Image (cartoon, rainbow, N blue to C red; front, side, top):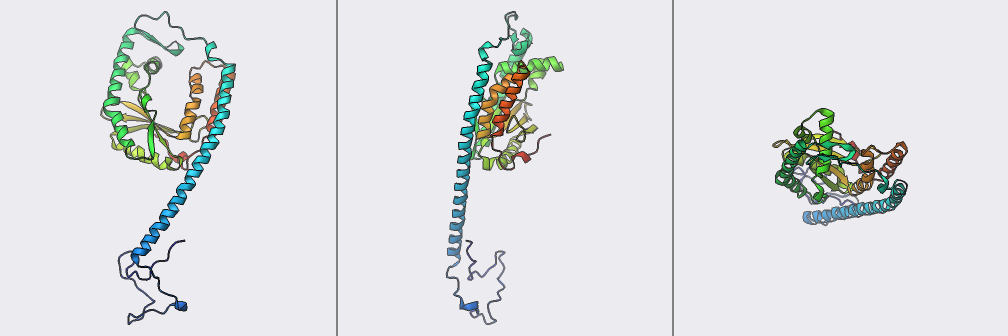
Length: 315
């Protein structure tokens, strides 16, 4: 119950003298309906009671939020048990060890062959190796320190998977091959367009997610990074979360920042093998349908934080 304002307060909240109707011109005591007693508390006691009431209300809210998050975690745990069983059944029907490996025995020395028979010749492979070294330097000297500094500004969320912030070189080369083949780019141009050679993930509590994402976007901009792209997938059916791409304005280096809750990140990890299999474009129509159904099932079980779907994409 909200405490009554003390009658002894002789100033209004805006600092002006109170205009009282309960005092006569002589300044004597006012007539009170029913001869009610005056409020016995002074100003300090009133505000002490008010702080106690607010603290109690905040504690009650925190307990309710914690209980809701615990219930959601328990529900997710049960749902993922079923999802993991589904994945086991998928692997039983399509055993990984029965898939034909990509052959590369005829490659020239110093070349690189990736999945789908994508190949980098020795000279191009050497140039990409140099570019990968430069990416690692930018990550170590500029980008990761800035992301760590941003992380320190809010104890209610954290960077997760930090040890995986650099994409594997084979994956980078695979994307470079596609860029060279599909767009006629040089190795350096192709690698400069890889958006996630460096990548980070912020994890938030559901109740703090939306405001946390907005705040961290502004913090990234304040560090001198330019938002290049933002994809909000909270309303999608095979993936939940937000992926964003950034450019360091000094070096031109691109990097990715994902924004997740604990559950949406676990869902991403759970469906990643299915995503990887679909990315190879090797499954037939039936296997593709099974993989997509699996991703939809897992994603449907992920709670959507309040307001998360309203964060606009960019550009």
